Length: 211
Image (cartoon, rainbow, N blue to C red; front, side, top):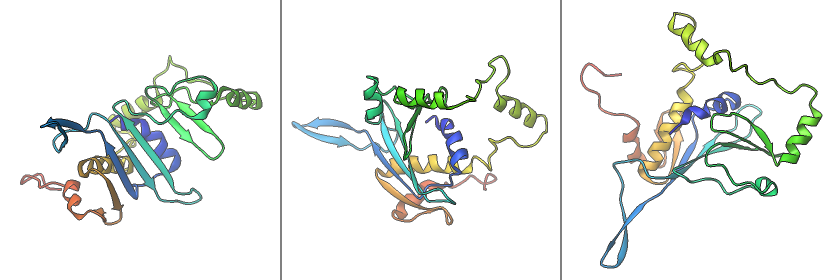
């Protein structure tokens, strides 16, 4: 999963590990004596899935949900796109707020308020629209990475800062493995409602490679 696209979301909303993850994977069936039976898949990632993550309220931010879609699954087309006679793009990110929706490409490129009339209203009310990044210069993340490799301060993508995002994606994989919803106790790093699923949170390491 290209979860690197969620980096800016975790930073902007100051997200910790989720309090729950609920997976809905696709499945494959086979016909046995004219009866369709679902084939249990416990060895590979599904062809497609959706995962709903719930995050607890924090500071002045209320509880929120994050949805992941892959394998061709997409959210239902919002009314705002229907107003512009547009289809839901094959990939991208959509932010749903109390006052409207923002749609962007996969890594937050070209964000825009939908429908188009709302974007025009916004642009008309802004005296200073943020300038686009100069593509002739290296991206800031690349510069920071090079400086870190040369012995500088840790970059924003270091392991400590990426912990919550990595933990979230791993929990999504566990939810897919058990085929349902898991409730997570981040403080104790335990799955509260499905004790048998805790075996997927760690592994038995070879001697000399223990953590």
